[in-house]
Length: 357
Image (cartoon, rainbow, N blue to C red; front, side, top):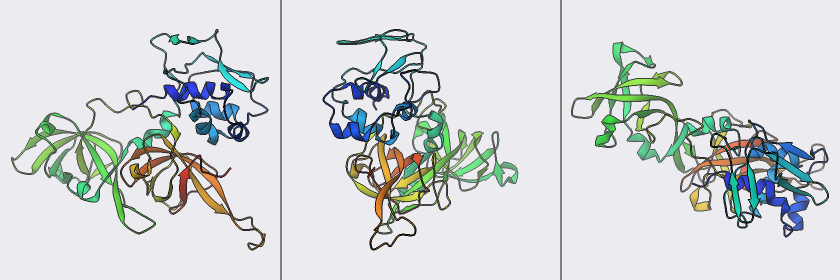
């Protein structure tokens, strides 16, 4: 998976390309209050920097997408670097001096202290809940080993407790590796035809293998828990031997989704509405060209209250921007990056490039 670096350079250099179409400049005008320069600080994000300079940060993917094919070598934006806003030419560029890193554009080269941490595209905390989720086909989810109960007849458990687990372990190596404890959430149903798309599961803890009776019964010790563990929770072999953290997760490169039409199929936190930083499921996935990092818009028909609908029909309006975290063939998980209104199951989604402004 590509890193954030391409997006970082494109954010800074996108408007420096003289060949950029006029429509992109019109859609992505700079704020009158934008500063002449901005020194990148720890805690900054590419999304936040776009909001600092642009009237509409939702159009940021359209801006840097124009230059993706022109930028061959990856770069990062680091704390201490200075972003200059050239008002006479309506351009953004990195200052050549006075930053934590030095650069020259032809040929591309840069140097930076090895302990510098690059600026992420979005706040890693925004992804925290989304990274605890995964999607599986219903039959595959049902086959996962499940907790039957706990020692001393406990109904719920936490770190240090012993669980009796029933089911076939994934591999022989499963006895030497840690497992994730997952809780099954309500299934995702396609709002178009009512078909079952997938079963979402939320990671709620970790467990280590202790013993098996040689059949399908095993004992596990719960090593960590983000909430109370219960009978019926499932186990799956952990994908990574290292603890999950913001530092070792593979970064996601943000990019506009290709043209497509779909709907919000489920709200993963429960409830009737979703807002910023919630995670939703979409009834489109890889078959529609979506992948991790795709940016999509939620579009709703908006009618002005108090006006005759015959003479003032509803018009489509983008009410939210979503970041696809994980895509399967026909379903995907997406994080709500920005929302101007509550999101509901059935709302239409499309690429940010197709969304009305």
